[in-house]
Length: 174
Image (tube, rainbow, N blue to C red; front, top):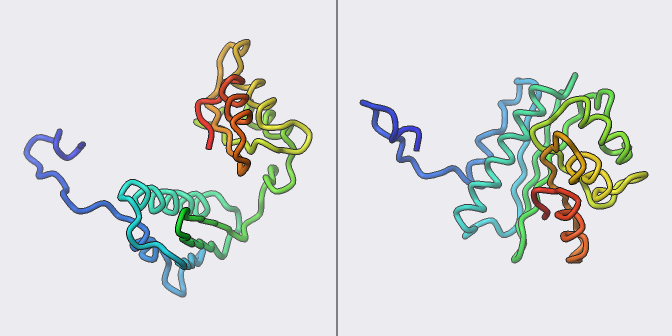
C-alpha cells in the first residue's frame, strides 16, 4: 500500500513472506547472537494470512531478542505445524533483566506496565498472584483514566474467560 502511494516509484509486488522464509532469518555460524530456526510438521498449505503472520511474529521476536536480550549468544525459533494449529516458540539465552516473565506475578506485570507504558500488554488468563482479568481491570477497566491496550491469552476453551477479559477492558482475547 505504501508503495502505491509513493509518486514515481513502482510498488513492490513480491509475494508476502511466509513460514518457508523463516529459515532466511537464521544467522551465519560466526554471527552473534546465533539464530537457529527449526521447522517441523505440517506447514504447507497454510492460509496466506496465517502464513504471513507466523513469519512476521518470528521476525519481530528475533529482532527483539537481538536488540534487547542482554548478553544473548543464541536465539532459537521452533515452528511446528499440526493439522489444526501452528505452534511457535522463541527462546534466547540472554539475561532476563529486572523482569523475568517466567517467575513474575500479575502484580509485577501491572507495575511494569504502569512504569513502561507499552503499546500492548499481553497477559495470560492465569498468572500467579493476580490473574489476567484482574490485571486487565487495573490497567484498562472502566474506572481507569488512561487505559492501556491489553490482550488476554488462554489455552482454556471457556467463553467465561473471554467474556471476563473483554468486560474488564481487554481489546482482544485469544
